[in-house]
Length: 376
Image 1 (spheres, one colour):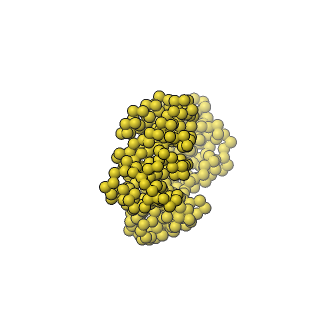
Image 2 (cartoon, rainbow, N blue to C red; image 1 turned 90 degrees about the vertical axis):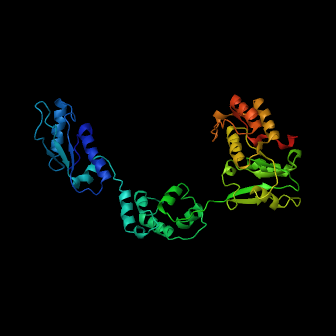
Image 3 (tube, rainbow, N blue to C red; image 1 turned 45 degrees about the horizontal axis):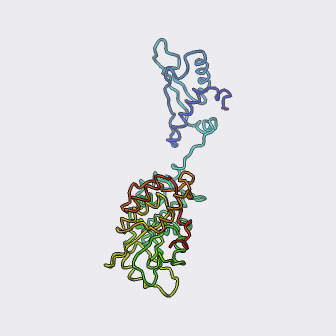
């Protein structure tokens, strides 16, 4: 049976057929006819409605079956209560008529999963995998499931998410980046190690305080120039929000890397002991980042780990002058992430001076714009 030429002009009939399509999509293995009972208002109760009803009946008996209502009210239209049976063997033709392509990917995934060794694996949450297919470009369901079998049988410890991803998914270390919850829920005995946080720092020959610097270029500039303001500072690259992690001072979670500038540098062990809280040394710490709300949020979070941390006033005073002189850029002109007012940071200088200026001017100034040679 060919597609009726009038179908596109009959929205009520098309709506009925689309309802069958939706049900088939949910039950691709259905073998029994689908049924739908017509309400009195399915078609307009006028000549147009009578014509649509007559056209629907033309589809029977080859495409559908129609069983008239055994009882109906005196003034109800002929179709009221009629039951339309869609013959499931015609589903391919129906899809063609309505330009519909059945997505049976979940069904195919479940079939491949049921045929695999994962069904008998105690360490696998099979119910989770059954409703959570995972795909990789150019790979079949069977190929993917083979990789899942390897993961289920992998007893190695101390592997990070990136390492697991690269070793099992064709060398793609980032494939599992947004699938950590899926992985943990599906493989209950799998041990995933958190990636170590890399911290870069510089130690002069003598230091008695620590300066955390938000951006990489300024961090290197401060190491090279070693101006009067920073002579006695150990300098740490804060790398945006990276060092605000709750495990930033937990041994085993951090990898500390000392930058070599010259021979006149301190030995790293006292600094490492201070970092991990194994030393009684009290090193005041300061933060210099951009002149924006994001940097204030970083400061607030860093203070949870480095309780005495304050804003570094020489850097922020130089940026404050630029903002008040009108040399800053409006927050609204650039998509700056994390620009939410932290309300307060716990640092008196930040809360009483910088945050009020940010609210007043709604402008930002990045620390790379400061000429370090003029910091005196």
